[in-house]
Image (cartoon, rainbow over all chains, first blue to last red; front, side, top):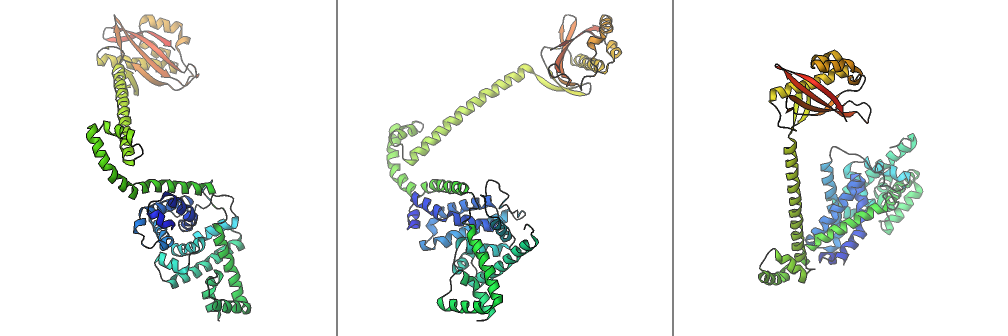
Length: 171
Length: 286
């Protein structure tokens, strides 16, 4: 309904779509590109790209998967642009982070240590609660691959978090 | 169910995506296998924490809200140019053509149209273009005027940087001047004189002075010597002006000394004796 209205150029519909999807897209981008400011930019670009090419979306019920696909593409563009610098700035950005729980920061940092392909799957799954099927279609990989990346990623995260705990070392 | 199967389905089990049958089998294995129970606990915690990140305010709400507003704003202008515009453009084109024929002037047209159809986007755009054009035109005129002023000033001052006694000094042409060779010689003597008195070498200063001024220097050496002041920085010098038999030149310098008087000026007068020039007067000026 909302997407249909937006397709017809209803400004309020844009507003509602942004309200509805912004944060989850934002956190997904953050999990993938590891930089708060970049994630905001990517989010913006994603919405603008989506709104400008709404005409090409045939099945409006697939909007969520479709906009996530755009988001992933934008994240990949960002990777290409910043290949040399993989700076983690989740917490380096002052004025950006509210007083977040320490363990969340550690978890984000641990997440940032995973391979890009694994991290993308984990963020789509847990920051957006997408189903395995949806993720498979967004990332264009078989469902089995999604499952194995999830399970490997989780295993690795547990390992990293444990090492951090045991050695009491900041990851 | 064995451990491999349990671990394979564990993620979906935690996400509560398995069907009833599978769920029961998972629960059963969980109650029987200590090792899998530990795996399950840890994984569930990690997943719970990951899912909790977006709820815990990691990013300031106002930053997110600002971004949302930006998007809506940009999307609004984006969408304006699309279907709605197409419709308006089509309908308005007919009206515009009529108005254009009536006013018969592209310059007057936007103002005319905006009076009658102020809210139509195309009219707004035309009006904006017109305003922009006028603003730029105005700016250009201001810039042109400024350029002319600067040009005039430069011509009045006729400033150039030249090498005198081994340093670069801006020279201002304040008078018609004398021939370049004498001009240079006199300016070099000025620099030489100032360096001498700053060194405390009154004899060197005397050497390039007239007999009368030598006496003056000998009697009032204290007044002329500038020992123990800072480095000299010549800030500018005038070209040599000839008045009657005297040649005059002013030099401004900064010696980094007492802040109030560190930046000051020396006025010189020279006379020509045979082929040589000699200093007949040197005085400090504020």
